[in-house]
Length: 308
Image 1 (tube, rainbow, N blue to C red):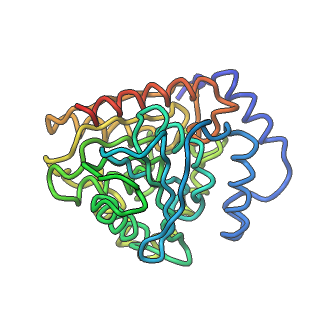
Image 2: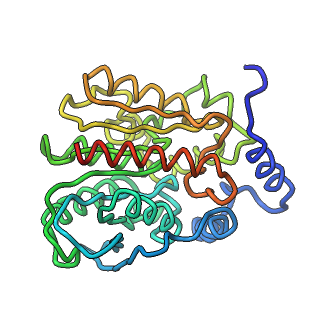
């Protein structure tokens, strides 16, 4: 690979992070990793959208946060699964992007604070998100108005979870899916973008190995349908998909291949690649104005798919 295209805004962030002293994220304890990730969001992300109200509640011991872009009204609800390798991330780290989706689509969004590894390895996160999907689709009182349908969204490991929910729910139950740089192959590919961006672009092979080892301690699960759906036949009943990749991301080629596989089913597919940007851009929009523009375009396509 020749020198990759790097946007000036990306180069500035990478230089700033490289100048920081301290251990690699993968060498921290899980609690230290989570605290650091929350701090990075405070530094690099935008505030939550003005005028979007939130309400926290729980189901089955899992915390949920609903986002209301206005007065509650009957309509579809978007279920959002946060990224972080199934190890880090929570309701707060992804509150800005969830509020953006609510504000831009005009629909209620429910974020899932699923259990994290290594305390809760596979299939805890997958089970929690499926339980949340059934619960939200049933129209709980906390959503303040009837639920007429379900759409799913997520970034990174959350993109894996969103695709899992879309694949496992009954045909027609999910109207659309927004998958932002989804993790869909946990077998640590040896070539392509996984090799080209193995270090130097924030998410690297070492950190991916840590995430996968923590959530999938049984190596046999790493190649299974839930963890690595790209390696298995996808259901023909999948809903329309909006898939976003980052050009400087180890997971870039996975997202590209997933978009091709979904399109090959004859499913409506919208694919956007954010050239010159890195994994994590959706939660670093204050530092990446280009990412903010791209995520807003993706959400607009997602809204159109939901509303038909």
